[in-house]
Length: 453
Figure 1 (spheres, one colour):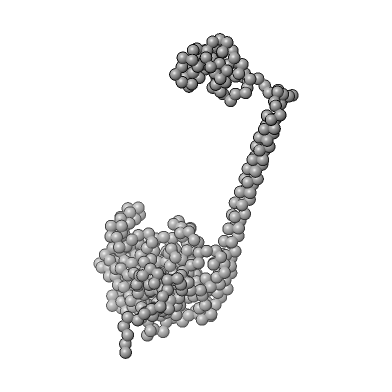
Figure 2 (cartoon, one colour; figure 1 turned 90 degrees about the vertical axis):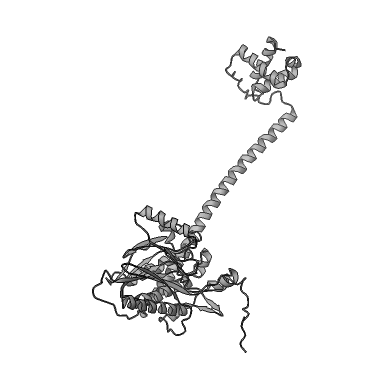
């Protein structure tokens, strides 16, 4: 049935009492006291809806103000049980509010402390590495190589050689039955590579050599505690790597004019995260080595030019060829379509036609029409052979560029027993080898396949 005027007055009194969170709740109490209000409706919801509609028609749509609280006697008319429950509820709300405030303060303190601790650890680690680097740099003064320098006029039409250096991993220590690698072996292999460049240069009448530093010259310890505890070893490896490369560059400078380009790799990064911007990528041991070489060799010799170090890629042209130098973790060189897509994307973005991509990273040689991939100077190690089951050989690529042709050549550097090698600084040869520790779990004794009796 429709609520009568008496029912609506009762409902108005319930709403004005302020004891109900909504008008619907007041209607529910009205129906509880007067069940006949619901008669004639199919459902409770329908009764509520129609009763509220009648109330609005009688008293208006605007919400009615609730009477002010009687603060002089807030508990008037409450029973002892109601007072106790109200006190418990108020105490609980207060405790929850204080606990939330305390937790929020603890969270702010934790975040601020963590940020400061991380900043302090980074600063301490880099400071230790920098101090050790300065100390080791002083040793280079006593080991300056004495090489002659080619002079004369450069013939711009003469052939050139692009020497691709990547994945040198100088501080890798490898002791396998078919491969041994340390700083001494690295010095021998680079001397062999310089000899092959000189031999090809004589055959093609080369006057300019372009050295491309493709990254991963050192293995890094990216965790800050390792960097802090091994700062001296990292500094020694950095200086010794730069020292050997200085010999290599000066050796080639005797017969050729040189240009040096450089990018950074993924393994040599000083931080755990792999950055992509130039500023993030050059926080890298490869960059440190390049800058040291530039400081020692650049500027005084007009026939030896160091170009600006790039982060992820460098582009340069020799005669009709335009090379894109990348480390190799950005593209799969085995997928011709992806290589073509990368060439097309870069060519369109830069407005130049890239003709050849130089990459590394995988430690496996590949010389193709539009892409060439470098192997590693270190060759196979315990981790690649035992843990990854991947075989490889020590090699680096060179490219002879003439006015009308491009010749790619893989230079095998595995066996260097007949080479004396560049002189190295004995005081810097102590370092922590990454390969042994990295493959400790996967290493296994080697069983000979062929037994000679």
